[in-house]
Image (cartoon, rainbow, N blue to C red; front, side, top):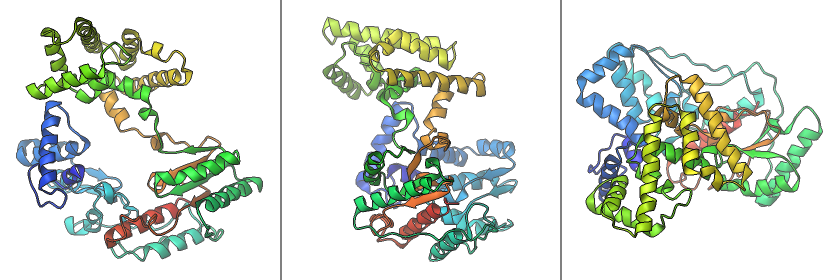
Length: 454
């Protein structure tokens, strides 16, 4: 709710913006206070603070208007209100703006996207020209006819009609199962038939669903039939515990006031700093209104804890101070190597070869980053991996059936597509049924799913 408020330009302490009641507004203020203490910005701030900067510092806006004389925006249908304001501000002087988007594929309203941005583009930029790209090169005529028949039920859309020179193709098939297990058996049997007939392989097949928890029964049936599969956009590489540990060390090196990362690594690997000690340091930080790292230093200086605990805290501070100093004159890969050396982290994974391999993979990622971004350091590397996802790295080359949510499927294509759970309260999702605008977004989501097939 706070992020949505920021996406709409809502300020802390301001009620009546459609997102925050008085209670949540108070939480927003406390949240912002903690963010400032951490010397941090969240994703919403990256946009919201930029708008504030442009509004309050005219000279800054004018400098960027001169720097960016031509503005190009892709996926314009997925922009939120604050992004829209940035685009308006930057393009106001030279009026050179080019956007690409498809209102039929606006599916991110739940995270702040505002479809009215693309629907009102001609009003906002009255001198603009509109070019409709209606020829489809991917799908067959039958698939496009089904997609067009669906999406024309929406009222909030620009009139257009996809067409193709591709053949008619097979008709869409529909199967009504008695329950999710029968549905899973039908889907997996269909996959086996497609592969057995020849011409199709497992990697040609995708199964889409509305919510992640729908995958469980399908996975069980795929396992039972020995059909290889991969979940795209599931627990990602960067969400694995060992990778989160390494990146937490990097985050503290980049920003020692990052309390969350510091709490994660203070006893990783175990160094005799227990939960009670961490809680006590946290209490001191709150009472003194100081960062967690300063509370550690204060605890050590005043011998607040038993001697053994003080020595453990001193050793930890010495390790981190050394790593911060080391990073100033070394690259990302060397810094990660130094972290592993000084903390003994690999010894923690001595009997877990897969997790050690994952740590090795972070070196490969760092090496690739340093080749692409010469002279960039830990902060830039963290920016890169924070914005990464499993979907970005999905290649479709592995011989596996792809399982993913409909949202994750956007931008991809497959010869064979199964969409499961096409029933009331799943799609349209039960959270959307009471609002016509939300139901239209659910219809656009189904449209995206249909048009992934070729």
